[in-house]
Amino acid sequence: LLCALAYKDSEYTVQRANEYIEENKYSVDKTYRPHYHLKAPIGWINDPNGFIQYQGEYHLFYQYNPYSTTANKIHWGHAKSKDLYHWEDLPVAMAPDHDYDSDGVFSGTTIEKDGKLYAMYTGNSPNGQVQCIAVSEDGITFDKIAENPVLKASDLPSNAQPQDFRDPKVFKKDDIYYVATVSKTINNTGQVLLYQSSDLIQWQFKSILLEGTEEQGIMWECPDLFELDGKDVLIISSIQMPAVGDDYRNTDTVLAFIGEIDWTSGEFHVESVKEIDHGLDFYASQSLLDDKGRRISVSWMNMWGRSYPTADLNQGWVGAMTLPREFHIENGYLVQKPISEIAVAYVYAAILHNVTLTDKTTVISGVAGETGQLEVIVDLSAANSFTIEIRAAKNEKTVLRYDVLTQELSLDRSQTGVNITGSENPPLFARQVKVPLGDNNLLSLQIFVDKSSVEVFANGGVETLTTTIYPTEELAQGIQFVAEGEAIIQNLTYCHI
Ligand code: FRU
Picture 1 (cartoon, rainbow, N blue to C red):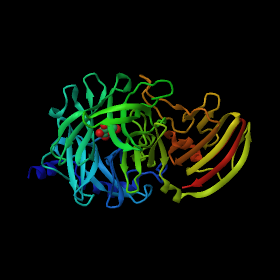
Picture 2 (picture 1 turned 90 degrees about the vertical axis):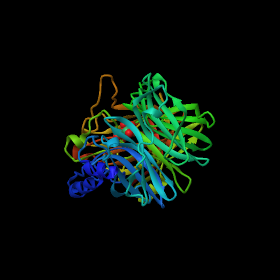
Picture 3 (picture 1 turned 30 degrees about the vertical axis):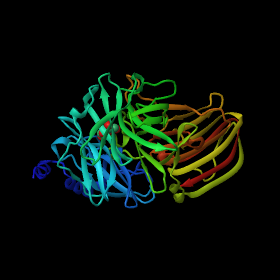
Picture 4 (picture 1 turned 45 degrees about the horizontal axis):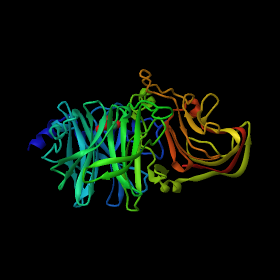
């Protein structure tokens, strides 16, 4: 009865959200809407949540405010897919309709138990942040359980600040349920906490899995934790990690810790740590293990603390997810590949072999567009640099440049169209990012463009750069190549998607 009352009294309900979406979704402006990336029908989207394969289909939930283009009164939006790029919108799964989540159904994850889908998420309210459970029999309608919250401030270790306690990643290992959540320490650093349970409802504190250093940001968010290629991987999203050289130039940063968990002590022994995407719009990564044994991850393709042109232009929506990526570990580091399914959508527009470019700007017939995939392997033994200008028009371009001398790949959106602004003081916001690629004169790039995004996979996904862009000049369709010295394109394919 209490649950029913709380639901009834709330201004924000699942039913109201779904009715609002149905009535208003056709008003959304399509100018910058992604074609093959997951986006919400209308409104604001942030973190991916609850990514799982359930009853044979991929389900992805997300942080969602259908009513406006700001991050308020967050719900869980929901979509499903058979192939990870055709997404079907489903009804909103959860609304902030209880006292303990009245200010937002914050991020979390799902797990299947006895055929049911359990969602574990953070309830955000004026009373603080707590962890809650909701159960679904059909994967679509969720009931928040009477025992909520299942983890609260009194479950925190003594080094934690209670107001920042969120983003449960739930998983099962050796018949025990675990949840990894983040909290802020009294030193204003991030940490990941581990709890365990036999039923997903009663939880015991196990350990501090990993505590961040001062250099690793003021708080961690959205942990992901899994085994991959014989190692343990912990991914966290760090708030305001200070830049070091070319690294952590983003406002907030996604880090992968690779190492080994000691399951007796519950401690993570770190062997390597690395920023996993050097672009400007990549955050809150979450993964699943699918029935083909693939570890597939999706991230929010946007960033906090920046301007959102689609909101400023009253286009009725903000935010999308990255293309799902398959993770592997190669030479001790995380490597990302676009999901293979996307190749089915390719409409080949250009294929070239052995073309030498020398000291001028080259346009290749058929290579242009707002939504496509460009793959190029280029021999730079006799070149000083190689540049691809994406979404180019007379006065606009997004510049991807490899400098052979410094071996750095840079992505620059400063001439891209609508200027994106963000916090300059402290200088958290960059327009150009760079990443070293190592000693190799053979450069391979795979680039996905989708209306207002660019995702670059360099050298087989050893490095990636993900960034949103908002071209204006007749929505800039051009792609052009610039070589300094002699660049030999061994292979090039361009496909519309
Ligand atoms: C990360 C985050 C999470 C939180 C959610 C709120 O982007 O801040 O920590 O649960 O977004 O929408």
